[in-house]
Image (cartoon, rainbow, N blue to C red):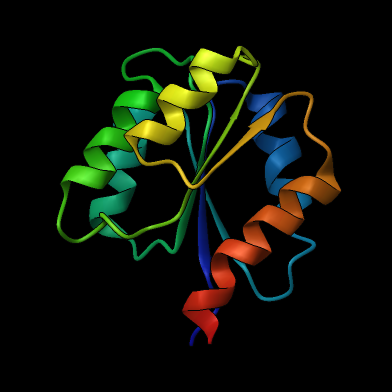
Length: 127
């Protein structure tokens, strides 16, 4: 398999850079960045993406809508999705997972937890 491409969807430039910086520890990964769900959908139509990491609270289109659109598209429905958000309430977590997210990581993120989650979701694709 070629190097995996990860799409980080986050409206906060600081948080987006922090997540991208953390993901760069994974050898050979390509990192794409999007500022909201609309931007992410554009990138998903033009780039081959292996995994999406998204915030929930964003302008234009929030992360939950993005998750449901990714799951509703035949080309992207099996793509792993990780939600990274300050919305730590149990109902938010359940809603994100019910919509089809594979993992839910609360902010502030622990780099080791993010890397472990991303690595485990990419493993089946590499095998």
